Image 1 (cartoon, rainbow over the protein chains, first blue to last red):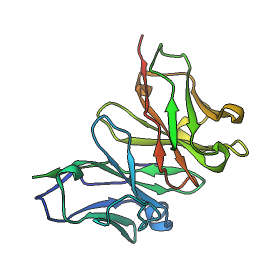
Image 2 (cartoon, one colour):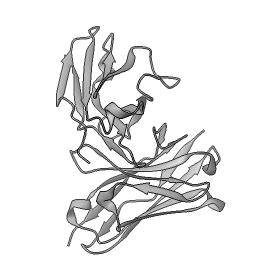
Image 3 (cartoon, chains in turn red, blue):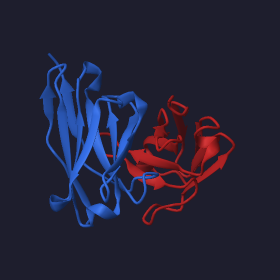
Image 4 (cartoon, rainbow over the protein chains, first blue to last red):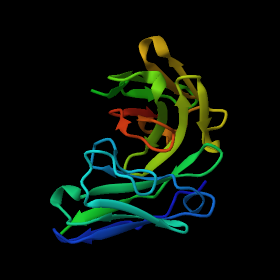
Length: 110
Length: 118
């Protein structure tokens, strides 16, 4: 399986919104509602931010939201804060009980 | 509180095998899947596979077919991931991660660095 395609980097000023795309195929992102998103700060383990495309775990701020259209899933961060600066990865079910991560996106807060 | 504690860093020679453990606490191991994800230095996350500790069922990406084995010892709430025929490209931090299904992962271990070098 090929990794899902994410932009290498996105940036925004504090308070702004940024959106990270995650493009796959009809065999993964486009075929299922099992897309999750993870935030990873340098040297740390990933943290779950969104699951099942749009659901937010308890403790994750409402500023984080997920969506999907066709073969592209998206993570939007509203009201960008300094601590949001991190790497973000999408992950999708890819059939046959396997999963695939995205290539990762570095979010920079200007 | 929920914790996944992994075994310590390892250095292995090419062709050898590695075995990483993941000890769960704060919840019942058999109620959640354990998934394995690795990350080479400076690279992205790579999904490897999952185990259902309740029945021992596993699934893993075809890339690791024939090289990966996942086992568990429920009496000590521990899951193991063994990777054989190691190559330098297997040098990475290996994470275990819990999920109510294999679809998403809400708690992660601290990661185990495995270096494969002659």
